[in-house]
Image 1 (spheres, rainbow, N blue to C red):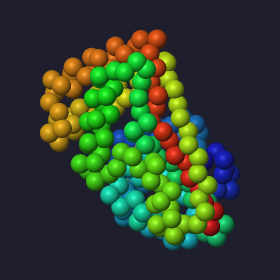
Image 2 (image 1 turned 180 degrees about the horizontal axis):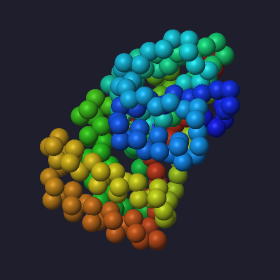
Image 3 (image 1 turned 90 degrees about the vertical axis):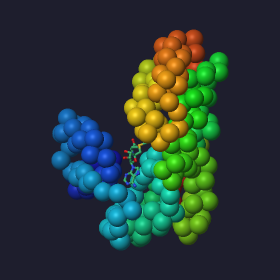
Length: 209
Ligand SMILES: C[S@@+](CC[C@H](N)C(=O)[O-])C[C@H]1O[C@@H](n2cnc3c(N)ncnc32)[C@H](O)[C@@H]1O
């Protein structure tokens, strides 16, 4: 996005996680981008009426207990003619062929973790109704699926399960032994080039002000 709007335009990226922001800052530096600023902030505290031509959120709304409130602020943040773009996943679409117990375990525990923290693992399919509830007119809607037989994206469920092990245990959703057994199963499955993982359904919406 920073490249698209250069040299006259600039981009502000917001996340509350300093690790993610560190990675983003590094990526921007490696690409020689000077027109992007990153802010560490819970989006609940973000409010900048009439300040932007585009407001975009990806894979964020499913983590929020009040997604409609954020949509309203994103809409308010736009200047007339501005574009609101939101993408989010519906994890019920995550599956595999053949079926794998490790992947089913990941889906169950990850969804439960999102919900314990006030989010909704199926937020994607609800985005359209969120837009209407926020009073944002005529969103354009599309749906994207993905299929993986190798590579980094096929390994996303496995790396997410590994990265969230401590949180799953501390939330009391599963034991370390259960996670270890699921990880072994999912790792073997991910490495096997004959198996397929179908990514979560991704809903994409936009509206112009
Ligand atoms: C699945 S990641 C998506 C990251 C990035 N938007 C992307 O599309 O690659 C979800 C991100 O939402 C951030 N997040 C969750 N709740 C948040 C909140 N209340 N305020 C700001 N960031 C939040 C997390 O820190 C995490 O980086």
